[in-house]
Length: 232
Image (cartoon, rainbow, N blue to C red; front, side):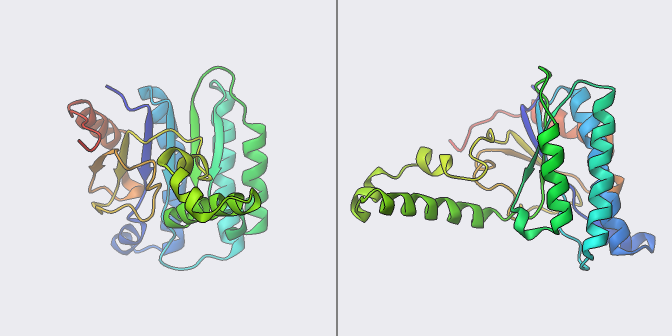
């Protein structure tokens, strides 16, 4: 049993930097670039959709540093598509929270990436906060009700999970089947709380720069042995 939608939180850069005597900026760069390997492994393992999240570094990076790191990632994804079936590339997050140049590059890459039947999708999480997304969905519902002249009581009576989910900025995203988090941390850091509500979780001690294909396959094997109950 292979997860259809896999989430990977590549954490532990700061710990890796301290252990290896390097900077937090370099650890963050390596964690981000690791996404390129993970994408290739997931494609090989038959995962249909992968969502990747690198938590922000402990030390702030300049706009130029952020742009350089993510340009390397986006260039790598474009190159990987040249020798393999095209994938759909999506950005999950608020472009307004990112440097203008980086936001433009993410938008441009997403617009150029088209599906050719391979069905493989890569979602990059950057400038995203899960509680804020849910709050934004509720605001959208209330504003629409006001514009349509509906009362608060009527709006509340109509509100259900389907409506709320449809108003999320990630409303088209399928539920997560499995979430892998590196560095042994056992929390989500605001990672897609709506879509991860009934996901399975796997925690590995490897820090993001050291995460291997073997670590991924171990997580997939663990998942295949589980009896999913979806909260029941």
